[in-house]
Image (cartoon, rainbow, N blue to C red; front, side, top):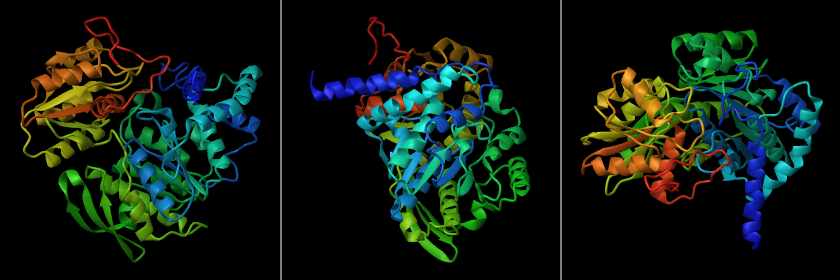
Length: 470
């Protein structure tokens, strides 16, 4: 066996070990929501020597845009000369994408070493037999803190996994807390009103730590303001802190922005598509601006040069232009679907039919996304991603049928759905893949020839020839 294949075998074994734990992202939650608390991550980190302490952080929560905003913060800080960690989820093509230093994902060897180093602590928590077993995300959180400590990161940007208050990342005390737009999402866990969800997101606010909030619905901002006041944490609204002097829309080439912070101005070429990314950029810069008041001086022109480089796949991504336009986004709730619809209307004014490949994860309502996309008069094709929690094609079609939404075709895999969409598409049509980041990611992989990273619990749909679709 060659060293390369041995290394890959060890890497796959490390992934399998990680995914053997309680996995709330890829499996149904047990004892939902009581399984969510900070006691287990605190115990795990204690056995590891508390690698999360004595590090500097920016903590990012929210329903929409938190990944893009976290990436912009990280890239902006790296451009200022800092060594910057970035922990995000979910990953798009490979688990290693969740752990980055200055934008570069962890290597396979580093990943293997981390699992080996941290696993005895996982076993200790299990042996204690008083607090439950460590979850995948809890171990990933510990891996991130350990990895960034090993790399001597100057500062790390940590994206919340789910909610905020009880998320395992909330074990940290950051230099600044960031809350991106709050909307109805994960209602079974976080609550069924904007106020309840905002309270969970605002749970990351720590005493005396400044808070930066994106533009919010009034009911969400009221909750965030109240929490900030209770914690004596200064709340900065990003659209007030950052002045948008000029915006030039370049269509599919992004936007040119002139932004001002503290009487400094800079030009940014924003590659990320969608008007909402302007808000995300303002939020990122406002958060970095707060660090100027600590031991992290920054320069707006350098921040801008970093943000210029940010690419964040599967979010408003143009995948293909010829022979047919293919566009993907991970929209999975009402607010993100509205933003996606506006992007389609603005970016593709000359489109004819919009053929929507729709696949969702259990716990999200596909009819909400479909209804918000309805003004595009789309042709719907339902599908299943490889994700083990994806709704089956029949469940998805039934859910849309109950909402009086017509489905043109049902398919068992993203591969089959894309082939069906291409068959239906004419010259000026647009194929849109959405409903989850996993459907979006698979379309990118299929079109760009990216080898997918398959996991032990991956759903492999079967083709009509009874062969797994790869």
